[in-house]
Length: 580
Image (cartoon, rainbow, N blue to C red):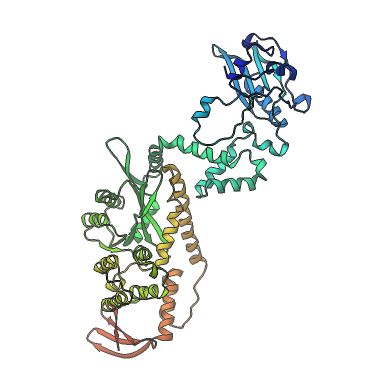
């Protein structure tokens, strides 16, 4: 029994034994008599102003009204309450056997906040209770519920029609709203943005049926509900995919307590793409995702449209060498043991140790984009916004064509900008052969290492579904959607190649032949080189020595000539540069 009822035990309103109470119509004067004097624990006014709802009599409860069950009665009372401007909460009940023999529904503002409740509340909250006595009592008689008591007056103002959307019992996250939230989260649209879309689609806030806070609370409740079985749900989902398609691969590792430590997956398309484009791959472990702070580590390749493609991924709990060893071994298992010719990674000693153990014959290089993006935080504040410094650095790293040229430009850069004592630049120089292009001009890199825009594009792609405290199930929804978009873009390129032909800019046979064997994106890159050769390259000299044909070429814009050596027997060629 709540406090208000104990204070009113002697009132003529109704007896405490509601099951035996006769049908009573309670008036405002009756309730006023009960509060003729204030209690010692509450500051209750001597005179309580009342508000009587106005509505169609057909919508108003009445003594003797009958309902087949409590659900129907609750719906009727709430419909009445919401139409006149107050919220409803469930009250006391009595159960005999499995049947509720009487039940109360109260105005939501009934009673007072107890002192015990007040001390429990940590944050500042508004007081909503004002001891409103509006309520309805139902009693089970025979095979139906009958209204035995109804008090309609309120001790507070009622909500106007424009504010009735905020009544607590009038707010509910509907099934359609839940479906919209699921769809939006699948498309990596957050809860707040999803609510805005819902509001626009439904025609206004009042039509949504709930507030943004309700929406956010539902999402938080959903996350809490799946929290205890999140990892199992994630694994079960992958297992169902493998059952539907045996070519889908996944594997995982648990610790001694049965907790998920590592997991790897690669679908059929990823495995097929690796068989075609797996010579040069990228492995990036710089993404931290989900609420368990697991590391998302994807394998990425480049297809014949010069697009980044997903080849497989792992979620690992730490960055120890043992974790990366497990990832690389599992990756090879998924790909039938085929090792890549070259792998590009970020800087991490544990990754290098794992590659040396699992992929000893694979060439290992570091991603320039990850290194160059760290520069601003590694230099003095005076250099962070120095355009000349960045221009010199980019020219040194990207523009050097030989190792000697890079080393000379680097030395001048260090001296001119007083970086002799910068240990980070010294360390990067000591490993220059693993990240500076001038040291491996003859190695095919598929554009992964050299193209900053490609790394930025891959980073943007993965950022759609990482970087937030998602549960594993939420992470998977976003991942699948992003992957579908990536593969849809590949289909767009395939269709463009099928339905169109590139425009030829010269009469050279090599250009025409290239247009028939290369995809449009690859041909575009080659065409630029052909046009540059026609417009700028000047043949300085040519000589034959046995099977080798050597040609010196200048571009008319620099002091360099390029020496192109062609083996006429094997048709292999290489190019070097030197000062005139």
